[in-house]
Length: 352
Image 1 (tube, rainbow, N blue to C red):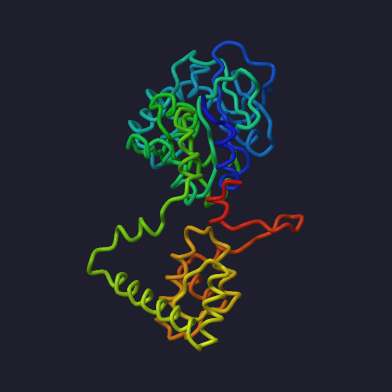
Image 2 (image 1 turned 90 degrees about the vertical axis):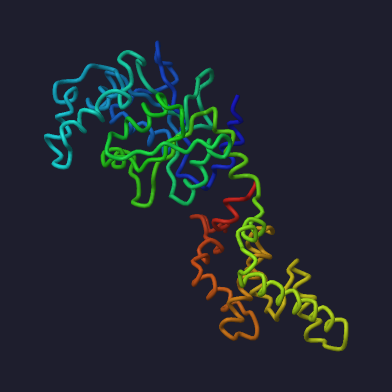
């Protein structure tokens, strides 16, 4: 049985609204679900953004193409032939349109009487969750969509050119695999996606893997160093920084009070530095999780050395992060009530 609480915890702050639990109704429609007359894929938005448990069926829907693809009815000639695509969309060849409107792109007729969506953290009791749907940016999708591949090496299914109803309701059923998809225009509009967002669908049997993917802390420095060949200048820079750090330690134990004060300041923040830093710069670095701070210090000091900065100030750290494109991950934003909230790194790896 999936650890729903744990899955919700690690997805918090990384996806839009509520992760959505999708359920197939093969017989009766449970009373806990409300029928809504929307495009079938549009039930996701009601669960995700409004926290409602909703469903579509032959009666409750607002898209006959969607109900046809879900096997709820036999559609009309336009749909069965694929003409609905090649007649109205110039880019479609007739054979392609027929293909993406049949076979594995359509659930078998009569398989379900309806399909439900509910917030993952509030699924009505007794429901059999088929899969979880989230909306997120590609950055988060790069991790979330690995829910299966990190365990057995099977890559996610992807989609383009067919109906989003297929992506979210049929493909996971046929392939029993994670699906990463931008969705079609109708699916994106029905769920009000921003240009930078996409969908990830995770079968429930792989969902527990998200707890390790998003909750366990990777050895960032270890991974990075494992990719560096012996001839990489990284190793020379690392040795030089280590030698400077040792020299600073030695100087701090002698009569150099300025170095002593700066070394003590670095120790106060749990940092190992090889050059002078001001306190504000150290404080900013310490907004990152502990396991990346050493890596961040090294990157900033490399940048300072390359630009002939003699001391690492807050301005130097910000400049380095701007050049590297990482500043936005370190910044603290605020909620509507003014309460500070952590940036991406803290949200990504926090266990709270």
